[in-house]
Image 1: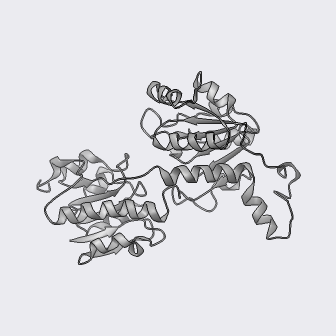
Image 2: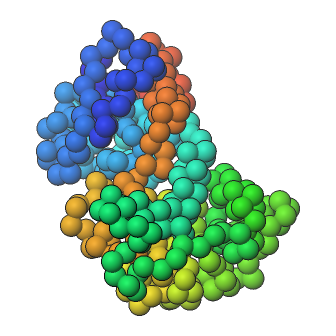
Length: 332
């Protein structure tokens, strides 16, 4: 079985302990992304199995149709709209789903909140240039950082990650305010947090607002310019979930108008993000290269599960198959 691991930007998979599960198999790691469908089809055509790192590459019907040897997609984590499951099933391509953990993305969210509110990155960067206690050489941006205690942490989406971030906020003495579906709001109240009166209330009261929603048709573009414009001029908007939750151009426009005053982002609509991307030129934005789950323990967990599913499939014992109808199906 010929196996390809896609989009391993740091060439990390081969250094993981779990990589030994693939001993004896022919494995190729691709460390750079290929965006064009034709180029991707040529690159991946020889492989029987692909290991996908989350949603870094999309697999629409048009691409799957051009991969005649493909039998298995082994996904790190869960499939989240980036693979056309219906088409894969038609073509007899099984999809094995893995597992995940909220710990790393929740911790990264909190790291961004701390870094942005205390201006850690510009302070540290300017110190290397000999500037003492200087957040910016622009007087308008050279303000003091702020503590979190006593301020309002607004969380939209109270799933596993949102719940952990709420706990961090409580530990830091913040007032935690939650919005989401009825079930989410009830769970937050049961945990001792306050449910916002409305979505507008969430945005208006937030000192820090953090998104923790799943991307679906109903949530795509749900954060509009009108909602962002309700935030305080001193507020921080944080997105470590999905860039597509924010309407196109809405955040850039809102930041330009000063409400919210700041943003911390780990996700972008086009990844890897180009060096000249407009969002990176906004001085009130702290941006990281989608590293929410990119750390040692998470990678061992994600890749370990994906490799186990792949090996089981090769042995004729498929596990965690999302589309069992594809098993044993002849390629059309």
